[in-house]
Image (cartoon, rainbow, N blue to C red; front, side, top):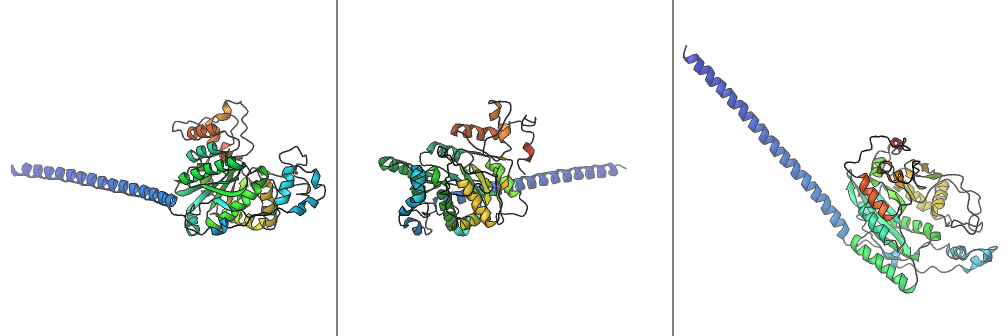
Length: 399
């Protein structure tokens, strides 16, 4: 009778020790698993940083001699025989004299931007920003905000600024030196030796598409935009990754759609296009040139169509002409606001970050406004749960 309690007490003690032992073992296993996870995460981050550093410092050994040995394009003097040529503004006359010129030497190139042609499929979104040499402040802000090269949601975003030359003599040399210094630090500038003017924006686009065919042929998607836009590139990645059955190998050209637009025939207008350049009285549908998204497939189609379509001074309308010839249509996206974002409640509310957290792109921003807005929409304490007046349709901006 005395032995029984002693036996049961020993069993209870043994059971408690087993429970404690199991708890200690489980805790150790959890700690080991957590340590392995953190080490793997750290290794992945280090690998990504190593890849980024390697791609930025990689010697640019891909052949690009063809770009630097382009003969100088000569003036087509016969253009002066066009009817009423002498009545046209000098800018239009110069455009007609050199409209046939499609190839110019490259002053700055980054052939390894996408890791070389064979690795360019690793780039999901290439940001192609039109920028004149003097716009240093804009480029600097973009590099720190929406155009920052990075791995986002598991995909790579890369950036190039495309430019020509401006000024004469010392001024031209000084601005070329500026771009050279920038490119030495960031390796993100493509510059050709043509005059960077409004009427040469189409030429700039065509030159870039030629460059892309050579050095980044398998990039999935592109944003083509000006250097004064606010682009929510995080949303762009989300939108593009969510496309049904399109990894860039199918047609996509989307932005702010313009339809039934007529050429401006008034000489005083910045957008003046005389009948000597474009006879039709209406442009095909096109997306505003402030910014639009397109796929690798569509960029190649536009480039191929451009070979047989004379250059037009209005670059976005020219894109529409190339699409029309290919039998393709541009598409409207409500999240692209190349005419600005309308906010009915006034100027102060116009810069409420809740309006910009859901859009893809808004045109006409000053550099400091871009810098502030980018950081505002990424604030951890930003609360947009209360539906903002005038932005009731924000939930459809991403579709």
